[in-house]
Image (cartoon, rainbow, N blue to C red; front, side):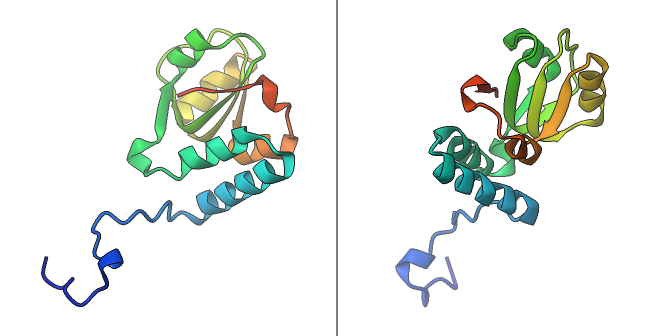
Amino acid sequence: MRGFESLPPHLCSINMRTGPTNTITQELIASLRKESSVSKTALWSRIADDLEKPTRQRRVVNLSRLSRSTKANEVVIVPGKVLGSGVLVHNVTIAALSFSGGARERIESVKGKALTISELLKQKPDVKQIRIIG
């Protein structure tokens, strides 16, 4: 560990957690935390905690899993990425950090909605009807 001798002990850790460096993700996390404190709901804080994780630890969900674990007209949040593997058999509103091109296409083909988390946050939905999947 050469070079760390002159640093204070609290700065010598190699595994320093910094959070996401993407400014859009940072702004989303801040708005989720603000909404959580204003509306006094833990859901938005939980989503913010999940989005603060490193990219490799974020959730990745296929459409086949969403089709198995959701019902028609349900609102679902995926704090990560939705991939297009599988078939979605009913319409569902899915909010996620990102979508693959095939996933967005297949969701819209069954009259579902593919939203970003910030778009869902602006709609101010009833949080009791939202599920986190992933």
